[in-house]
Amino acid sequence: MAWLEHYTSRIKTNTTASFNSYQDLSYWRDDMFTNTMIFIIPVSLIALIPSVIWAIQANYFNVVLVDLWSIAMVFIISFKKGIKIKNRKLLFIATIYTLSFVLIYYTGLNSTLYLLVSCVLAVLIYPFKNQYFPAVINTIISCTYILLHHFNLVEFYSTNFSTNVLLAVFGNLMFLSFLICFLIPQLFKGLDDSIKERILQIERIENQNKMLREITWMQSHTVRTPLSRLMALADLLKDRDITEDEKQFLIENILISSYELDAIIKDIVVKSEHNNME
Image 1 (tube, rainbow, N blue to C red):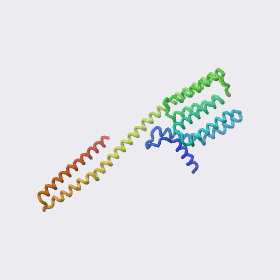
Image 2: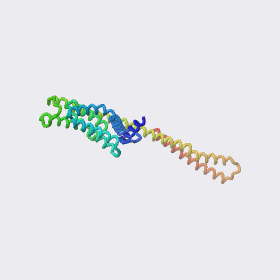
Image 3: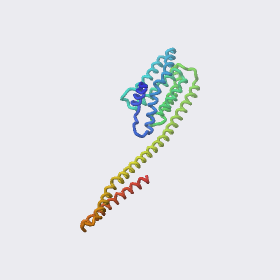
Image 4: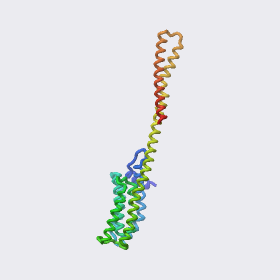
């Protein structure tokens, strides 16, 4: 459908940065981010509508505002022109972490899964200098929540759990977050090495093809000139009416053309040997 093609094309134009001919790791990160943005807008309605209805019924109007703000941010990230791909990714990560924190504040431990998902998405789409940065964010949020709850510094909306339960749940969350931040970059490193090796192989093949084309051109054009000259001079030598001076002149030019042809053949041999070594 035309509207669907326009929708995906618009998002791909705004959220794709790696247009290089070789599909390196940066390309796949950008492609993953692009597909996330394409997928998240229509599918998010599945979560948005029930969440808004529940929040209104529970008088959690701040949740409604944050839900709507999150959707608005997703639309801005996807459709607004002029934003660098790096900033789009950071805005998206900040949005999902903000939404996760608000949901945990209002609904309690049921929403810790959002923090784990936020960690996974952050590691997948953004190349942090410190690979454990998303896990550190989850740790800070978890510790803050536990301390605020334990010392009753903030009145949470869902408090049907003890501090020990919080420690157990958030402890597992932090463990899984650090595990994710360790494993996914390791996977990416292996993929990156494989992609770089594939790119080097393609470049070597292209260089070999280029050299083969040069050799073919030399054989079909460069060799042809002195060879044609030699054939013409040899044909003139067959004429018995030529003088001794003319014969000497033809022999000298035959030698010159022979040396020229020999040099060209040696050049072709060198290029062929270099190509074989490659």
